[in-house]
Image 1 (cartoon, rainbow, N blue to C red):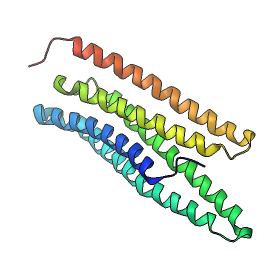
Image 2 (image 1 turned 45 degrees about the horizontal axis):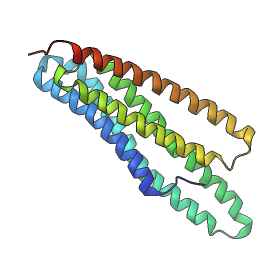
Image 3 (image 1 turned 90 degrees about the vertical axis):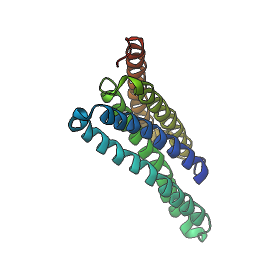
Image 4 (image 1 turned 120 degrees about the vertical axis):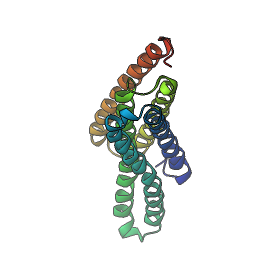
Length: 189
């Protein structure tokens, strides 16, 4: 089973949290420059802060999952298989939670793209694209941790991951087009 090491998880989660942070920064700058927008953007800021915190907690979770796997390999022969199965399930669930959190933040970035100040449009785009990279990395980790499962058991996971990745691609394309349109418009003063 691969992809369980804490350093790799920290990189995925760190990139995701940074992507969400860029979108948050853009929202906060927008509120600073146009305080009348605070009521509209405040709920998005709060929701993204929650998603970012969830992403950061996943780093600790991944370390716990890795330790559980190492501990499972040290179990007596009769208990090892069950402990390894449990650890393997967690090694799939944790990166899957990151895939979902990244997509949540990407959706939120797309939703606020037209609302942010023109000077920070690129930050929203960059944030969404960093989130997409973290989503792809986490999906790869899920897939490598699916390998020990029999093929029929992997099918539902693959269908789910493909649906999440397809939506992430659509959100990325929407944000790319939205950024291009906003950046082509005359500069707001």
